[in-house]
Length: 79
Image (tube, rainbow, N blue to C red):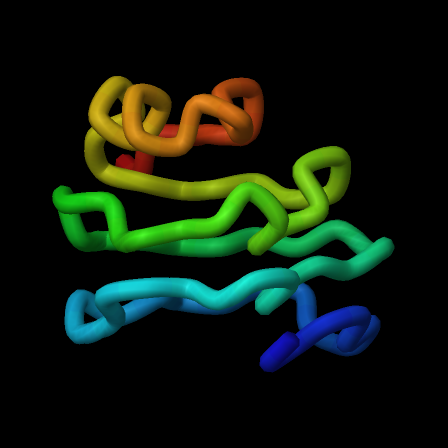
């Protein structure tokens, strides 16, 4: 619940040193952009994000879609 319903939070960069994201960590009812530069998906519960309101920016969309299939429509490739 680290940033649960933190309405002022609009974007977050997840550093390579993060190995897992906890339950409801970034669940919010506002739009949020999450930037993940690591090519290896971290451990993630199904409820880490509010999928209707999250955009996940990643280097390798297919790898993340396979690992986090419940968020399949939320990924955007980082340019």
